[in-house]
Length: 509
Image (cartoon, rainbow, N blue to C red; front, side, top):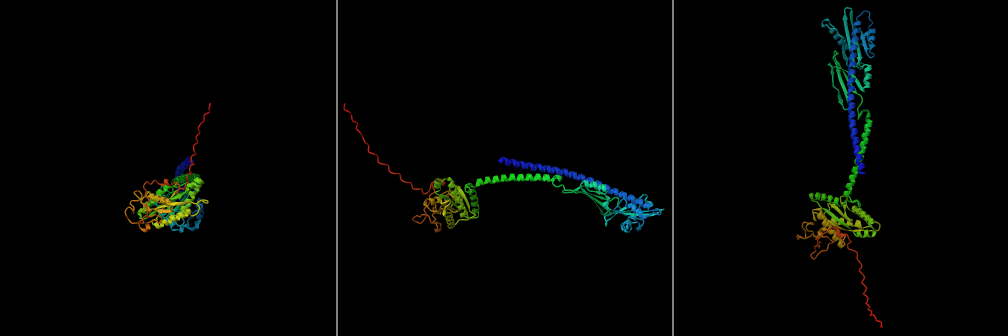
């Protein structure tokens, strides 16, 4: 099973890595293709705009020369001029020759006409084409040509929206490349400027300024990608599904490993039968709590609880029933203490409780009585009742280490068991070396009345009899019931029967 989980984890990682690499490669290909499409579209649009401007200048120039002829219909000339540019407006001669608005009333048209006459002066020695400017109010292009010859004079003006500068065929090619072309007028004069491609995330664009043909103003031509790359372009859904699948598999594999580690941790720290923490975890928690209480100069209590007569339960009712008794006893112990207290199973039928902040003898006694009453008050399983012997030790009075506190509580619990009381506190015990650094009795100090266990036997001077801990061997010496059940005396042996002797008789021959 562990191999399957490991294979699933490795497989999900391989799937995620392979998909991620494929996505990166695919995005790189799409970005390169996108850049090529945008640059190609930029060249097409720019060329189309320049070609349209050149054609306008030529047409307006020829129309202005034709307008100098005699008996020319100006309106017909204007209509012929806009025939090639349906969105345009044209004027020839005067206002009567306009296809739409009177362009000759515009200040920009008058300025362009003046420039056309000046450039066309004989002293310049050059033939000038029509003059071009921008009409910022209508976002249009203005082309004006004014001609004065011996035969007469003529003026022609045309206004074309800048959106019409891009031919229909060019726009169709741009749409195929999935880009958007935009042409706008600028009031500022400018030279021709082609900016390098710029990118913002998935957005790519190229901007170009066309200003060389203009007498005033300029045009801005922008080519921008219209489609987002996403994760991997058209394959985004497929790659997203693979990434989602890999993520789910990885999460499941990781969760199984996490659950297994949690289970192993629980097994290492929890008693499987009672669900209490085990001896090792209780030692770890207690050591940490002792360190905290020591630095805060606060006390705590350690209790050792041993079930009375549990071996008889196992021997008479079976180990399975004994397990039920242990489970029920553990639940009652947990119910009898505070949420901040720690209950653990030390081993066999012995439990331990850590009670932080409990350092007064009266509080310890009340807590021990409550625990004993909760445990022995009613039958634990069926009609089977169980009692316990409780020993308590207080930090730092009876020791500053867990080993010292456990030994002191263990010996006091043994004293309670042998004397038949419910609980004993280690104040009545003479502790030497590993139990207490120094005993109040050994130091000759007088015990306060509050420090004397009410259940302890006293000597002639009123001091409690000490329980000597020399030869302490731990909990194994309590495995038989205490006190042991009375054993019947062996029946007396019957008196030996009197030996009979027989004297053989000899037959007379």
